[in-house]
Image 1 (tube, rainbow, N blue to C red):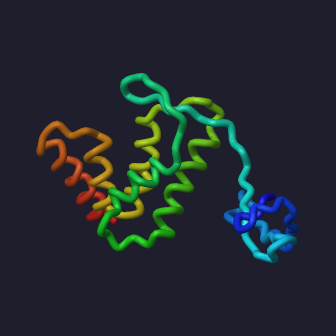
Image 2 (tube, rainbow, N blue to C red):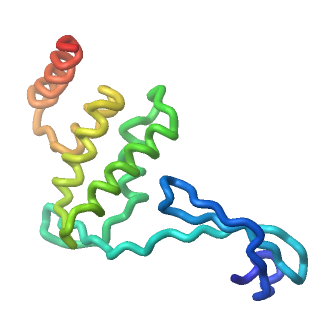
Length: 154
């Protein structure tokens, strides 16, 4: 591994730890030339999954795009970043544990909606308003009523 400080290729691993449910290995390294320390991470290289969009085009699944959408839905809500990251991780795991090499964007949206419904009702309605493409205020209000009725039923 090349040192990010002096670009020397002789580095030594001084510590190794598993993180994130043993799915990532964090290695602490020492450059033998400049004695700087730095971290590297190893993550399992998973077979890429294609997302089939509504217009039938395909693109690689992008966790960052999913995170961005969830963050927009959770904007200005009292939701800890750890909880948001956990939801994204759960969605990603569900997608990668399917045996398919392709997944519809609608299926990803449904998974995200179910996770957001338990996380925060406002974030859920925000995400649903984009995902479900409400055509008018009545369809939007119907979704809000469902959330309200679910909340009352608890």
